[in-house]
Length: 323
Image (cartoon, rainbow, N blue to C red; front, side):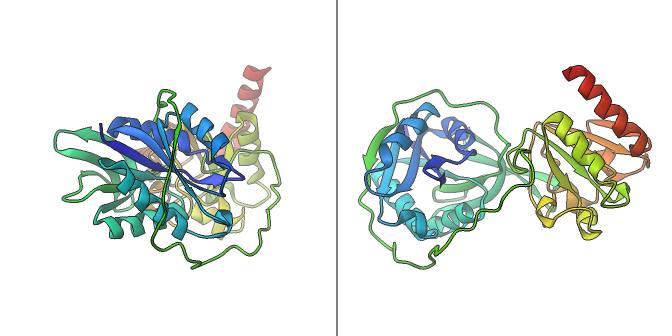
């Protein structure tokens, strides 16, 4: 069986949250195998955890100062893994900036086809089929690479399930090619989080607020609902531009793209820019007083009413269920 390679991003020596989903997607396309770039002698524990997530083989590129070099070691490692694997059905990466850049560079090197921001992947008789949302989410398209190996970035939260646990056998790569310092991390400054809410990109539940909240002070209502549900907090571009919340909370085409199990839109009209960033959520609930708001076109459940009446009642109901 051909390998389906997954580029694994590491944070403090641990696989990123998207890794399990990527390996689950890879299991649909071939034999799931992970590709990691690590400091020499540190691959053992990582390989064990990747085996538990479904990687039968872990291709390891041991590179000095790997955690301070940007992108080029990952590209070289992927290229070496493609050569070492022999037969590769596809290469999957996460949808982060670094992974997308590594994927695009790899596609050029191996003569592959880069397909970005996929929301689903399947193996068909005609080859690997990739589902994407086009024109700001107005259309859903299915495409396949006309030639070469598909190199695919997958939107986080798009694929359900997990791959069965596997051996996680280490295969050391002989990395050649460009691993020179193109860009290097010289310092890291960790941003302290104001709350213990989950990350917007990885949360199972997201509650987002829009211009309908009316002010920064009233935006706290969205935060209270999110805290009651154990959710992340997002916002529309209109809310961010109005100063109700920080820019890193923006969900949409020019912000963060999310695919949670539950997305609650509070006081958001649903402009196409916002829908492009959230309409792949499994279940969408919209609360808005305007019954003609475009958000209801993509919502699974809609509440037409004053959010300042509906949301406090919803918060109380959630708390009552939890107590």
